[in-house]
Length: 205
Image 1: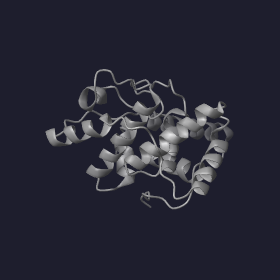
Image 2 (image 1 turned 90 degrees about the vertical axis):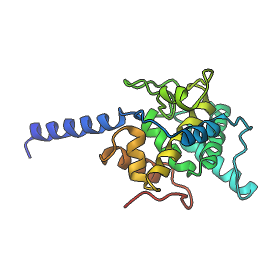
Image 3 (image 1 turned 60 degrees about the vertical axis):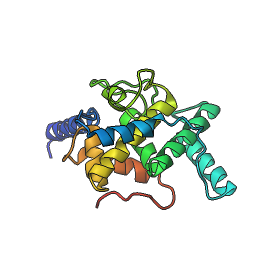
Image 4 (image 1 turned 120 degrees about the horizontal axis):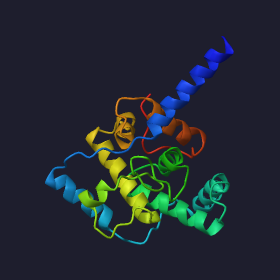
């Protein structure tokens, strides 16, 4: 194939992938009962205590995940705090922590202060309208636990309304429902970068 044609195809693929990542959750009216349930889900401020089957699993998981994350988060103490919070909020929402890590890698590259062109914020690129919809005025989406709490709650909500279909739920999360680029990127990140043991939710084949 001609080099110029190859370059053009590469640019187009990069553009399509960038467009998928640049999306954001879209505002949709919620039933009063759903809104109340989501508000309750993001309001609990219990101290994060992630669950592990044993102390050995805790040590192994934190050690391995910390090693994988070290290049992106050099500070060890901050890195461990982040990992514990991710695991706690993922488990609380019934999600695989590795899935959430894969989503964060695609959404923000683990950058706390990332802001998309659409205004989505921080690690899980949560849109500000969610604070007005289900949160409180003092919720700061750049706060670690607040961002993870909202992001995991929103993904769980999308999974519920899509009857567990992760492909479609991820499309909703990114504002690209029906397009394969974003779900495929998250799945690849989940499997290749953050895979660990049995998954709670399996991506659609």
